[in-house]
Length: 46
Length: 300
Image (cartoon, rainbow over all chains, first blue to last red; front, top):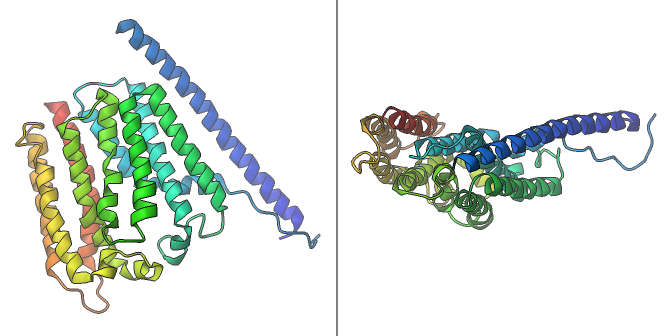
């Protein structure tokens, strides 16, 4: 494999990892928000 | 254009990180944890329940990643495991270590802040037990590795229950005992038909160290207390007849398959069909037992 091919593969992997990481971080933010709302609700009703 | 510069190390693909978490093993862990939670007498908010199960899954994934980090040399020697990211050379060992430790810390922190201390402590014990007691201490030293190490896989129902109630009780402890006693017949049935693989890798599994006859006898012997632990919640009044009759029927089939394995002797070029059948049924058995528990609780 040439260096140019290899650099392409590296960039493609980095892009795909970055996309997965962005999705996971977005999901985590939504989860923390949802947990906070639930905790506030439980605090009010308890 | 080609040059003579040093080869560039390829970054691992995200799918390889996913493979480090042993997703197939995680299925049973998540299911038993979920059933432990649903069997608890206190309901948990669905968002918090989802978070607790997510933490159990991430904790199990972290333990799996650390197991693969430590056992990369063993995995390279066994057909069943040589395609994993580390032995196949698709990932650096240090990446697996960082990923495992990071995931473990994240799962524990999330469990503590979103759920409660009891569930966090049990999750921490299960991860540490799997990594230090099973993987590092026992696996390469003694044929009792999966007997004692089996405790690590028995924690999820306790964690699920603790996430809902904040403590532990007799029923989740019996569920712990069921998985703990189920592990030896389950793994020894597997070890009987992949014995050469374990022997090549130098893992002292019971068939390798003590021979086939002893292993078959031990499968039969461990099945007895396992059946007792499976049925016990019913006479103790912790479950109703739906679970009780399901436990009796499913355990009777398990016992029959185990006795068949215990009584036979393999021939040269044996296809090991009874052993493979016991191994496959043991997985189905645990799914159905925990499913029956949840159905019993919901219909009670």
